[in-house]
Length: 274
Image 1 (cartoon, rainbow, N blue to C red):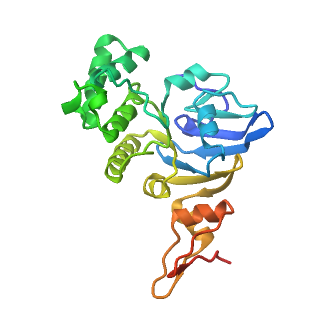
Image 2 (cartoon, rainbow, N blue to C red; image 1 turned 120 degrees about the vertical axis):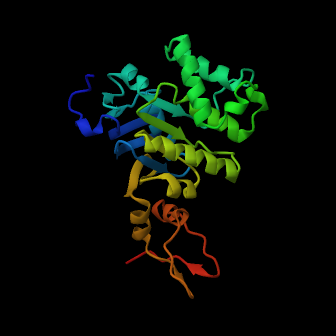
Image 3 (tube, one colour; image 1 turned 90 degrees about the vertical axis):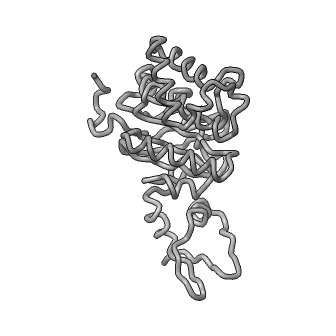
């Protein structure tokens, strides 16, 4: 298999973005966005609304052309070789893309056929994914009868029809109850365990803390901080509490790094490390 020249072999299943720029009229969506995600890891991309998260995902998944910079996903340039990239990625957007009239099995088979699998291969792959995501018992029910958590699991399953090397998850658990959210987390961990690279955008800071090996904070279209959850917490420093010292939560780290004011309780005062 021939990969794009100039991309280190170790990054063929990962993500490399360098100085990406995107302008919408007078509004700058990305302003020098640079990010590397190691193969087989989860990168949590965090930022306030309008920071550029979804724009970055759309460029990296070949849905949008950048105005400047370059990016390689799974070893291929997203502008020069978009078809090769698409063969190797999966994408779960903020809203489920499954057909409510069809059954869960029919949805998966449809996505398989759209991905150029033969009818037999699509049928086999659909069965595998229904088992993997705990949907076998509901496989032949219309999706309209599924709960929100079941629909999200099915949506995640459709993105894996072609066994992607890289998976983009754009706020995958928005609107789910805590139990359903935890279930989706477990499915994502299983995928990473098989070597899939995941770029996750989320509004839930706990979600990033639970799943991400690496966290990148984006604000005003550029990465303003990057590291493991513990490394980012160390940049803020421990909270001062009357009887207990704890590390700050990622919510507090996020507020600190994006220039917002952390909420102070009567028991805890957050003071940046000096």
